[in-house]
Amino acid sequence: MLGSLSRTLSHILKHPFNRGREGEALLRYLRWQFASRLATGPILVDFVAPMKLCVTPGMTGATLNIYTGLAEFDDMAFVLHALRPGDAFLDVGANVGAYSLLAAAAGARVIAVEPAPAACRWLALNVRVNDLGARVEIVPAALGRAAGSVRFTAGQDTLNHVAEAGETADAVTVPVERLDDVAARGGDVPRIIKIDVEGYETEVLAGADRTLASPDLLAVILELNGSGARYGFDDAALGARMSGLGFRPCRYDAAARVLSPLDQPNAAQNTLFVRDRAEVERRLARAPRFRVQGREV
Image (tube, rainbow, N blue to C red; front, side, top):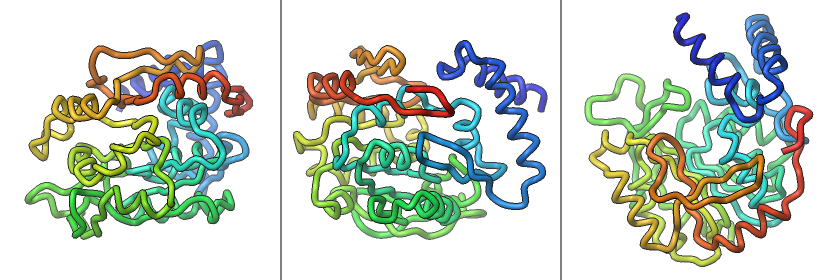
C-alpha cells in the first residue's frame, strides 16, 4: 500500500501540469481523499472550463484528472488544440468520457463508444450534467472487424477489455459494431480518433478501412503498450499499417505547442499518429487557450 501511495504521489508531483505548483497538487490530492470518504454519491468537479466531471471513489482514470488537470497531458491537450468547432471526434473506449468532454469543450461533435455498462452509465451522466445531448452521441458497444457480439469484462475500471477464453467471472455480453459504420452516423469523417481499448486496437482498426483512407482524418491517438499480445496481436504490425496509410508517429509538447516526429511508435503509452502534419501544426499554433483548474493550457 505504501508503495502504491508513493508511486501515485511521485506521478502527481512530476506531472507536467503541476510543475511549479507541486504544493497545490498535493492539496488537491488531500482534498479529494477527504471529500471522497465523506461523499454519499458522485462528486462534480471542475474539468476543462466550462465542463464538469462526475467522479466517485475507485475511478482511477477520472481521479487522475483531479490531481493533474489533464491525466494524459500532451494527448489531451492535443485534442483541445487540434479540434475546431464543428469538427467530428470519435472516442473509442470512452470510459466515463474525459476525452469526449475535452472535444466538446473545443466545440466538436462527438461519437463516444463505450461497451462496459457501468462506465457507459457514468458517460451518459457526464453528457447530461454538461448539457451535451445535442453534440455527443453515445454508442454502447465494442468495435471490431465485423458486427456481432463479444464477452467484455465489467469490474476492472479503466482496464476493462474484451474477455479472453476462460475469463468469464465478471464478463458480460456486449454488441460489436464496425468503426466505419459508427463513424458514418455523424455524416462527416472524424478529424481525430482516440482509441484506447486495452489491446483490441488491431480488431478495431480492421473495421476502419474507409475511415482510415479518408484524407479528412488528420490524426489518431492509439494506445500501443503491448497489451494486444493477450489476443495474439503485434503492435509493430499495427504501427506499420498506420505508416503505410500515411500516418507518422509524433509527440506533442503541449506546453510549447510543438509537434515532433518520432522514429517509431511509443511502446509505453499512447502514440499520436499524424497524417497532414502541416495542417495539424497550423491548427495547434492557432488554437485558443483553455482553462483547466484555473490555469491556461
